Length: 175
Image (tube, rainbow, N blue to C red; front, top):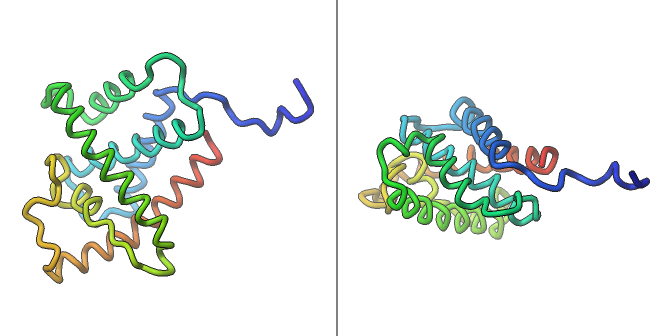
């Protein structure tokens, strides 16, 4: 053990550790940050939390060796209970659309310097969490111009940003 080894963080994070964190984060979101909760929205929140752990580990080179992607997707499908209601190909298609929404809206929030500027509203992410959690296009049938919806999106965004910052701090200290 070298002198500076105490500063090295864990080299890999197992899929099981990612799922455990995703469950903790989902429960925290539902308890402290959610503006609407249904069984399906809990599944969508879990998918987001699992994606956050995966994306962090991918970008930090902390994924296990081999083919962790297949194990990760299978685990997310099982943990959400969607293994009982969706075929794997349908789930993969749903997850791919969520992956793009999650990444796009997180990048949008980060580049807008929210909450200082409040220039970006993650409408698609709001629709995933609050309106159409398991639809391929979660924005379908949701009128962006409806002021009641807009007020709800603003409330969601404010709570979500606080939640996202908490997840980032947790990933930095635990992964």
